View 1 (spheres, rainbow, N blue to C red):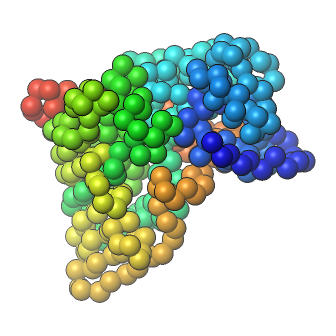
View 2: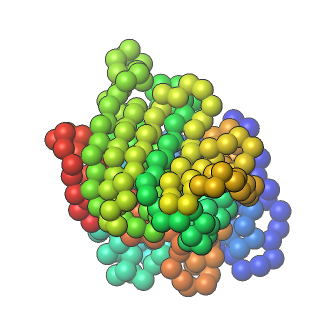
Length: 358
């Protein structure tokens, strides 16, 4: 494992941080981005795999803890990143908040909206920040797209479609094969819907500025197989119809079975034209107008598993702590996205439209 962190001295006020879970998301995003932030310092890490934990701690130059409780009992640590498997998110976040730590939790926020509500309540009770790692809304292109939409450039929104499809987590997760915890229902609960759908549901809510009212979904496992040769216990594809609370309809397809180039596109149809975001290899945002003119905006590339760029998540988390303010991505955002995911699974099971229960 080749890890290279910049441990140069920093001379400004630093938030002392602990990282729980030392898998790929921690190694490629959280740890490097904390290290690049002059106001943050990684004090220690924990992972159930102690060999990995020690290895990452040595690469960073911090302490390796032997348990979550040991890390959380360290009074020096002010904030934590929860980068462990999905089934631990609610438990570890609640423990961290109870211990008086600010929390940045990876998505999906929890396995059940009842747990995400408890997380929000605990954060409010303790007066601590609870931020969720929905990083796509911090991408400069998505931020610019929202500004363009709000300017009325494509008129009133009529409908939308959004995709997030790649070849699957076994191609980049820590095990780099089909033994990944992402395929284990006891650890992940959700498949592509929770992994990729969480991002797209959040970005739909962000861009349109409205909540999802009702869903009709088909969630399935089409191709992914575990070490035993059988189809995995979680979904590898999900197709969803949405109705937003302002009546705008839309569709979403997320998949772990795209064995070509990654597709992370969103298309929004308006009365004056069409906005395509990451739908063109050369341009980040393309407006195809009703009068047959075209407007192009080149802002930034989309972060992918093969193109690791700064997500902005860590900078926002640290800034919100130091400025004592609500982060741009709140526990409520994570909860509302999780509530929509839960409605999608219920819809797929019942084969009917289901209202989202927030």
